[in-house]
Image (cartoon, rainbow, N blue to C red; front, side, top):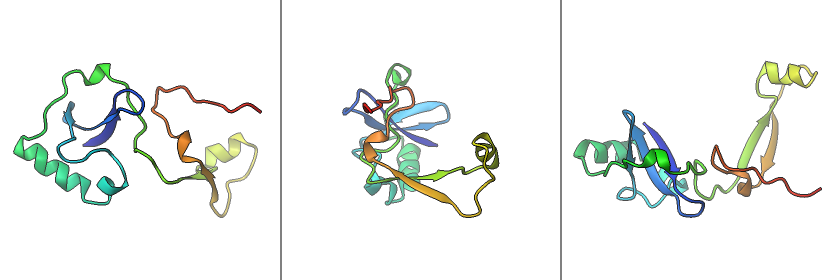
Length: 119
């Protein structure tokens, strides 16, 4: 089971992909967001799937894949998080995690253009 958000930017709908089929999750949640993820999303979704109450989206392949979560409050990143990445930069793997933040507006869908600010 995988959660996703499909649709035009700002109009994405929550979906679940189960057994190669995509189902509309709007009867379970308004979006894939912190509230949904904190309230047993797998159990609630499994119950709706088992009850047959989620409509299947037959046009899912034609819809844009949005950012994985709506309105994240923070994006916490780990630098050089695997040995090959450290070697690529000519460094030894760190002995303590290298943490850095990104602003929430940097989260986009996998096929969306990445906006690079001037300068």
